[in-house]
Image 1: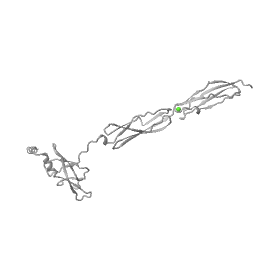
Image 2 (image 1 turned 90 degrees about the vertical axis):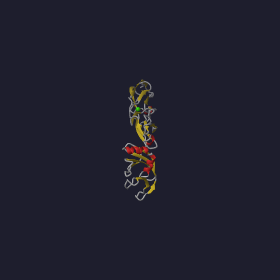
Image 3 (image 1 turned 30 degrees about the vertical axis):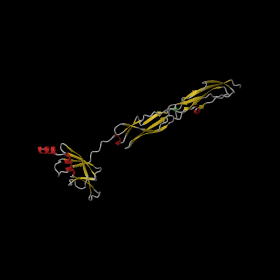
Image 4 (image 1 turned 60 degrees about the vertical axis):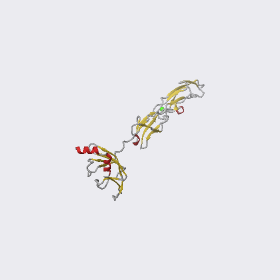
Length: 272
Ligand SMILES: [Ca+2]
């Protein structure tokens, strides 16, 4: 810029500049069919002298904003919203229309963006069935648009006492959107039960009286006491001298079999 312009700027009241250029901007309500629009109003907000341009901001009441006389040919841009920024590459040349743009959108705020959700740990877990066991949920983390933690709601708790496939749902939400994730927890019984003899493993039984089996107890980590599930092979003939062996077996709900246990019964002293 030359000396003349510098001197002029110093002597110009910016509000005067604004009044000058607001008259050069026209707003109208333009119908969709492009017919004659109804006049609307323009008012300026700020006027900023920049290094190579002048920026004027303001508002308008119609749906279209043009340079007046029109420097923008039909179809006029239909504006969404009623704020504008007019950038004049040469503010002092009245025949050069400004570049008209909507103002930059405000920076997103924490709550203006949908949340994000991340599972802790694996999305699939396989756990051993344990009677009375309590599931410990690794959980999930949710953050808002700025990375701040927000609440996670979890639904469904696996039951470690029962075999099965459980799905835990994790959800979070804010005013903009929601996020979810799920975890599959498989509770499996892979551990064999155990058997314990009641009474001695070697019994001497007097012939000609009924032999009562003292039985066994069976215990399983998943199902607990499963003594009633025990089966026995072999038998004792209490009316015939001999050495008999009975074997006890049990299989848990997961199909795991205990190590069998045996008992030897010697029948003696038959009167015949
Ligand atoms: Ca088991």
